Length: 370
View 1 (cartoon, rainbow, N blue to C red):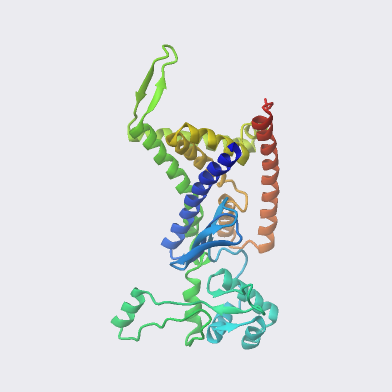
View 2 (cartoon, rainbow, N blue to C red):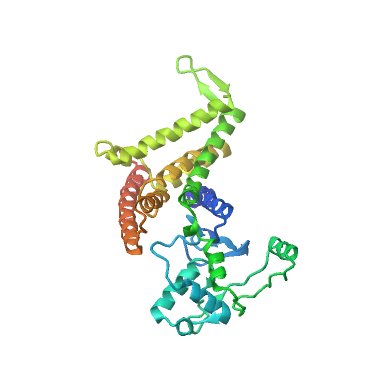
């Protein structure tokens, strides 16, 4: 029963923290006009959910972690055939790779690359498991109230609505392409990309500071006098609570920075914990009360946010470093280079994970970790 409760509590805790983290990316992206096709709790895979505002919200079969699929974040240069391929598939409604290659006068490989990139953009739908052949479809479109009002004010006919895979007239392929490109992450200037990348981290830290304010300024805490043993209930001003919150964030930053110091890295790792330790501690804090559980969640939210700042792909900090590199050199990092860096980052994290899981098993299962 204890194991079941630990799994339940750690799923709630991590699920919520990932939700607000990815929610930061989602809200920032939508505020800056970038399309987000998926906002899911859990690892990528089969899931259930609903679609609203062009985004599928839901839960996957493994509800740990989560992601917001921000369109246009694929690395490397854009395909030079996107404009013609987009117009061709919109005119057809449904098409396969060979159809598009013939219409655009390009090779099958070039057509496939452009089609897959447009799928990543959310501009077309990719093949489904039910398709006998790999079929691509033009997305369904519904004119917004704003588009209808602007057309009426200009004395023009209202934009038409189209179903998924329905052919449509494309008078201006370039205007169609520009409309889709403007909704992509890669179309934004550097500072807007930075806002999207760091929004998840900012939300994690903001949540933690708000919890500190609630706990220290509204609820209050019991403090014990070390000399007399007397217990007194105190509250702080909101400003003081914010200062305490930022002091804790600073301590976590200092700990993370210590990972890059050979003299302190081993101590930091030995004092860290994996999801196993988090599960054990989440049950302990949950049994101590809702407030204690939320406070533990706030502390973990800080750790999650700061760890995401590490300059290692595929973390947000790694992506941010790549954006800085591209800004300074005016060169795009290739897909191959990003894949190598992401693989190296995953190997590093798996190494840390294995060490910390062993520590947690020794500490919490066998009780013999010094």
